[in-house]
Amino acid sequence: MSEAPSSAQQTPQPTSDPHGQSLSPSQGPKGNNERPRLTESEKKTNHIASEQKRRMAIREGFDRLTELVPGLEGMGRSESVVLQKTLDYMKANLQEEQELRQRILALGGNLPKGPQ
Figure 1 (spheres, rainbow, N blue to C red):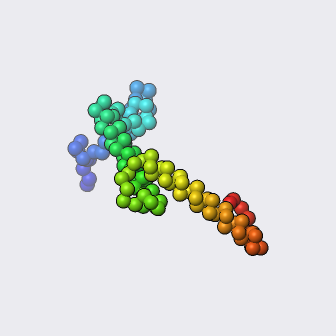
Figure 2 (figure 1 turned 135 degrees about the horizontal axis):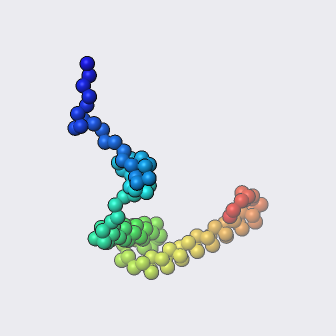
Figure 3 (figure 1 turned 45 degrees about the horizontal axis):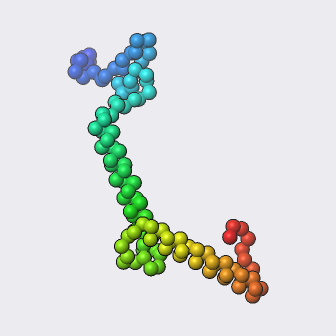
């Protein structure tokens, strides 16, 4: 013989909204799994954390550039200097690539088709 479960053992039953539609315990009245609204303090804390994460990503990007671009090793990290030297380095590399392509063609070589 089995006993009916006591009220303490019963699983939570979905509730109904005013229109008689069933809602699961995690759904709000609109049935769209809304989370509670954040307080102004929580919003401010989240904003500060997001801004710190963004700044860290920028800082890491500049640090990586100082490792990759010749002449930036060991320099203080002035962002304008890093950007200008990176631009100069990229222009020099593109110019060198163009000169090498012209030299290959002048010597009778072939270049692959596609974006250059």
